[in-house]
Image: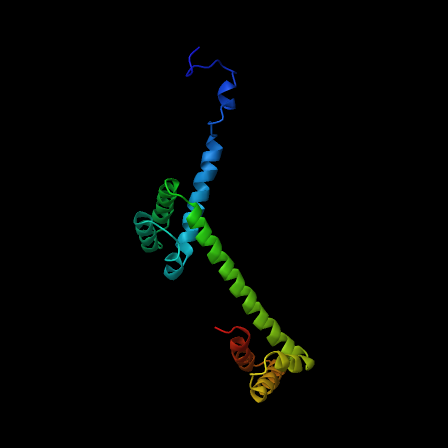
Length: 176
């Protein structure tokens, strides 16, 4: 029997280490397509931080223009996935991981500001703690915004002072 022939029921060809199942190929293809979709979702400034070759950059720019044409975009994303098969994906994945971590860190900092704002409105002792942690705050303006935000909440008015309080404490907690 030659290498290309096999008997019915013979599973020798399945034991070959270089054999990749059709399902595995499809999973890898979909993973590359999802990576392409993630690249497409990035803003142009963030996309510039990812090491992409010219062909892939051009394909992503074309995908941006096809955003309103669903079927064309779907086919083009498949094309982007096909382009990515020939690329070394490790630098791209590392850059995307760095961007994801940066976004998570920014979200965490944003939540820290929101938590402080909520604490300031809920607990009068939090004002003293905030002033101790951030002595450069305008204390008079801080107390006035807290009073106004509480008054707005009681009267069910739009939360203007609530937002202003956030704007006051954000630069103190998140120095740029």
